[in-house]
Length: 295
Ligand code: GDP
Image (spheres, rainbow, N blue to C red):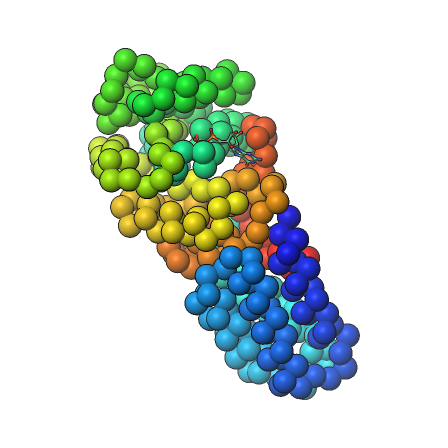
């Protein structure tokens, strides 16, 4: 994964690795390469520029030029800064409600339904929770079926009302059902469209306003690069979501989305999806991701 970025940064940083002494020109040259690599990986231009400026200032501030191992210091600086850019610390889920309500948002095909199942399975097996999945897609009967298939697979109950065309009503009834039946987490899977449109945004904003979730997660396909950032911005403007789920990181994808989203919407990436199976879910670790990007 992230082959392009890894290769390029490796190459750029290799210049510094093992160098006994380097000059300010070396630092500038290397950072130019780092910036180019970030741009190639679809990182927003402004972010890439800010990133390299920060690293440069820090490098000069920490006397990289006169340190004993300037190359290693530079590599560390780049890694630390990249980690910071992706949020620094791992961000947890707020599961404080009874039940805790988690609302899924995102475009169709982003991996919402799959991730809803993965998260339910994660909370059930790793956090000893009793989750309820809720099918709120009123347009595609197939989407409701898909959630039932997922629920059967992981042994989690799915609440649906195939005849009901009011997603706010379905979500509210599901929460009442959860309260009556001892479920402590409710995961609401919503309808998605292939592109952002006003009707979809209004619908999910209405559901959001009515159920007041503890966590609103925005699910986005990491393979969509710069588009992922634009979509994140549109959803955040409307929902002020709490966290991002980056899916399909197992594919031949670039690192740009992970790096840009946090800085553009200022919301943490909380989970990643790394495959189609129910177990292919990981908590997002910025430092690990930085390591992975830099190789
Ligand atoms: P939704 O329309 O947002 O609910 O998206 P789905 O959950 O139906 O996912 C769309 C497609 O992406 C399906 O074929 C999933 O199997 C696939 N998918 C979802 N998450 C991942 C992932 O992390 N990795 C891979 N490789 N495929 C995924």
